[in-house]
Length: 139
Image (cartoon, rainbow, N blue to C red; front, side):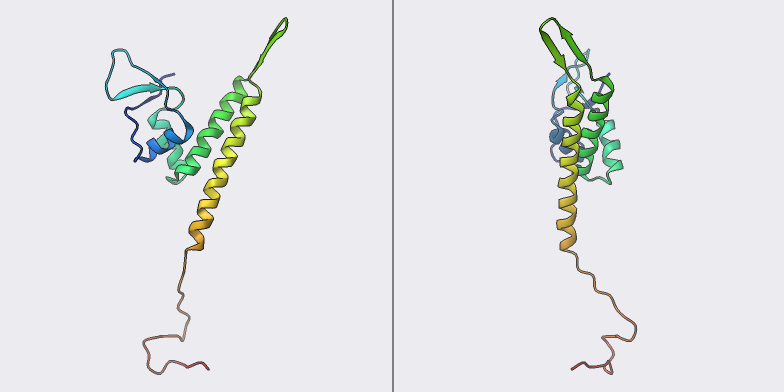
């Protein structure tokens, strides 16, 4: 599968931040070689933009969604291979990727909670017109 993305990775863009967060930095050159576009190992820039859109442009949540997608792929393709005394299993990888998705989701929740602690809302109640010199006074 071809996962086209910009090179170099722009760490200041949302797509670049998600790509760097998930560690999707390995790539192969295209044939013929293009200087600004490469084939990344896991996600195209378009896929990362879709993940960001589904996460309301939140890099932490998009990263969690990316790991969840990798976990789904790993679960669908996981296998155990045994030959004589040699064995190899990729079945645990899905669980490990899901745990990473949960961790990133927790980071996003913590960041949201921290941001909500800084929120102050002033609500005007009926009968409390603060510009009225005849406003009620309280002891």
